[in-house]
Length: 191
Image (tube, rainbow, N blue to C red; front, side, top):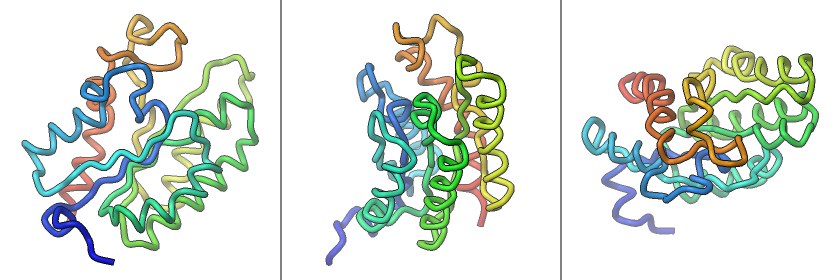
């Protein structure tokens, strides 16, 4: 299979997430993924952002899709942002963690770097469940020796969420980029 010409001149960064990365409810032009591409044009022009995020995606759906996505895009780096939908549906935290771990293994077996993006849940599932959920991200990052963004939505005020109180609006996208960029830049600058 021949690769497109662009595959030879750029290295892909694959964003593999859910609605928070797919730009749910906002124009794609103002999504943090698009803002990232604009930023990289200035600082790391050899990288091309490919956004394979799907609204409503769970870790089990991501696990089913990751091999095909890796083959299609051959990324140098994957920004893995999944798990929120598992948590909001009250799915087993241990199953979510296993699925994320399997995705990470597949990405690394393709010699790509991983940036794991952590999430937190609203308190309505109880303290034990939400604490276990949020702690699985640093636990996985430590276990697999990968980079971590502790909380994707850190610093976003309540008024910068859409009416569902789950999805950030267009004004919040710059803050999401600000939360992701430091860890990503370290990975891009590492030899």
